[in-house]
Length: 215
Image (cartoon, rainbow, N blue to C red; front, side, top):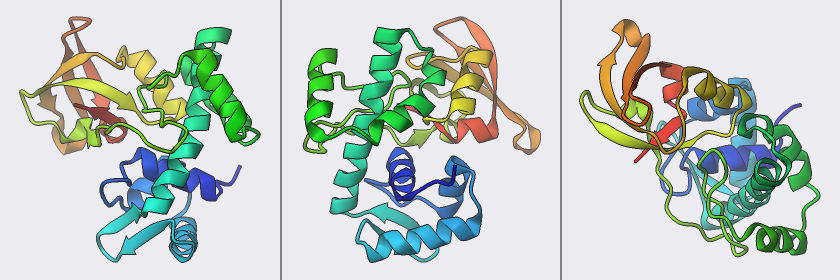
């Protein structure tokens, strides 16, 4: 399915576009679309005052765009919590269902769902869940790939992508784990982490490490 305007707003939000500029390349990687498609949609979002675009620097959500993106993310992630906590879905399998459910969720339904779930503030893969006014706590936008050798950090969230989430399961990396960067492979082949939580060394590909965020 071709990503629509809402998909672009959500990925810009997930990449930290509420507080910093994100690049076309980052959006392209997050949505797996062509460079031309990203350029076309960014131009459309600029015209609709959802984002600003500074040439050679990147794209950032406007105040209006940040609220719109936050409410879209809220609906999506509330359904992810419901599917995992109440219907026993694995967290890497809920994205397609949540994607469908968010589009038929009005503010009243979202608030009832939030009440039912106890107003969660994080989804199963660590993403923040904004409130009904589009307000949210600050999220980490520092990617795992930006860690320095010997540095220790806590894995806070993973980009909402089925393949990426499945990958983290396969390599044994979980939200909440404390990790130390031990080695950076030649030619950016992979990172070697020591997982303080599981007491294991873990190899993480560079592409994945760009979409795993730490604090």
